Image (cartoon, rainbow, N blue to C red; front, side):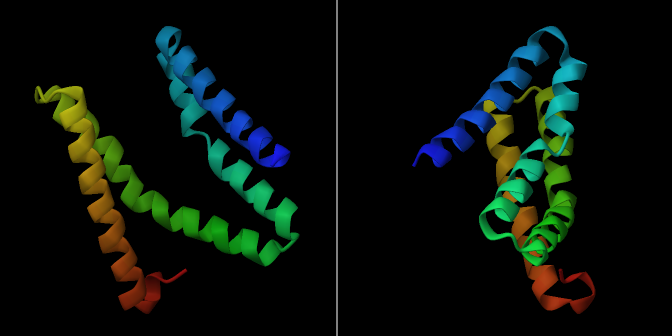
Length: 117
């Protein structure tokens, strides 16, 4: 349980630090969040827990493929905000459309062998 709490605290500190930095230095906050910090943490924890480099490689490949639909979120959210949508409406729509993109991409991966992991 202690390890779980330490892991949770580490991730929380990174996110809060990025949010605080973004208030004063938006580019630095964006850089911190755009780095694959959560992926690095997840990959390291998976390796620490299993010692299995094949599982780590599979997860890293899966993350790479999922970047494609997740990019949609960062295109749609600012577009909705600039069109005058409220923050929460734009966020909800962006999340919903991104979830749809994830579902479609996952279906495509299952259907077309060329884009399987």
